[in-house]
Image (cartoon, rainbow, N blue to C red; front, top):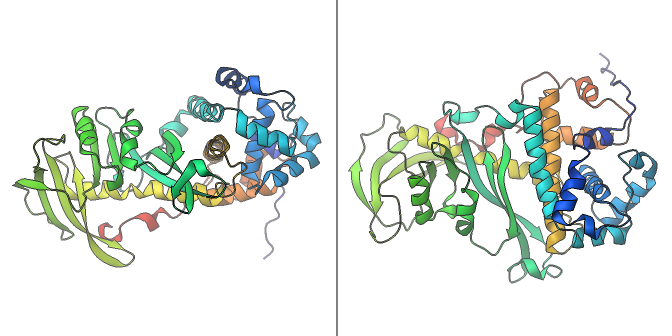
Length: 409
């Protein structure tokens, strides 16, 4: 049997132009004026800078020469994208260093809001995974480390011979889109960023985070605001048992009790739930201890919620393996922030495209298909339909079962 020939509908515009057209024409210039990026530009406009960064992510450019040479060789088709021009190596390096990365950050949030208004279902998402029975919004908080070159980036000194930047994120579990992001050096402890990350969490919503973000003063603040949280307990936590809960019928639940901290002077929630459960990790069962401020959920619900936290691990793995967050186009903090925010913007645009086309294969395959035809004049949505991957079930986080705890299935 012969393979089906892929013959997508032709278009007047290149694939890259159609992707860039998701960004409204007035948005970039407006943000450039507000952030002061326009004052630092002469011949290389803020829009050309944005297109160059998007192209660098979509082609996985490994350096300034790679990116600039490619755009100069396609200067004709590039000009059709609202007059964008190809940068010189020095011009792009200067723009990444001098133009405030706040422009890229604000552009990401503006686009998230704009695409959410265009397609409300894209922003709200749907209930997924073990937490399908929870109707309230669920937020997952975590961080990922971006390794940098130590001898070039003194500002990001992490350890004696290492440099790194951190991306702290609050991810909406239903939409799998970021709700809050901080890009900073890796030297600061995660728990110091917890209050900022959870500042937008409302009463009745749920927050999931690892024990690196445990700060009992912050947990008390969330409790008083009416938000629910689930995390893991640290091994050295000193506590007193207030009440032992009835033994669960689930043989994976070893202990369920209500506790309070031993030190009454330490700011903390008055009462907390401590659950010990057997979970399977790498084919072996081991104990994990969970903490929550909800005293009514079943212990299985608490364990199910925490295993949803692994969705953000899959998210970080996805963007770091697919987008260009390994080879940076500049050594200064501003250039790194530009590249991180533009990677998140490309992720947002491709996720929106997958929503429109009902793309049912992995995010990685969507990225590679588009990368191969960026300058081709093909209809974007018809192209994806030709691959036989449209109109299927949406599973953009490919094979998420790998991140689940098999002991609770």
